[in-house]
Amino acid sequence: MKQYNVYRNIRVRALIFGLPVAFFALQMMAVVGSLMAVIFSFNLMLLIGVGLVNAVLYGVLLKLAQEPGMLQIGVWFPHSISNKKITTL
Image (cartoon, rainbow, N blue to C red; front, side, top):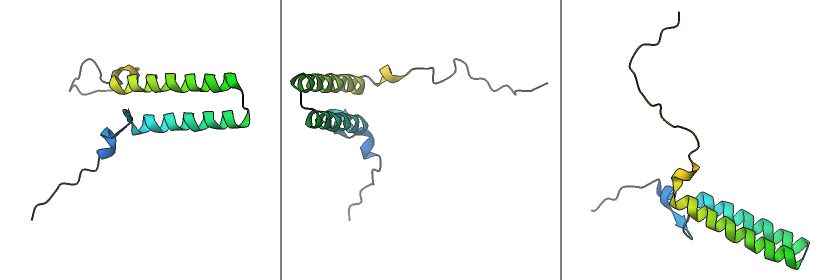
């Protein structure tokens, strides 16, 4: 009988509409929030602005998903690694 390995980290690389799951959740929260704003205060300019903001957010999230290095702010690793014992005198 053939056995298959269980791949538990499938959510790490899962994409929905080209976005990772966390970015997709952020996009959906923005869409739900904008729908609530439109429903409770219907205004034509608000409707246009919300659509524009959601489109720009989707574009930014797609760009961040394609180039994850843009999110790196600080230096992750030191420039030199040493095995010297650190003494405090």
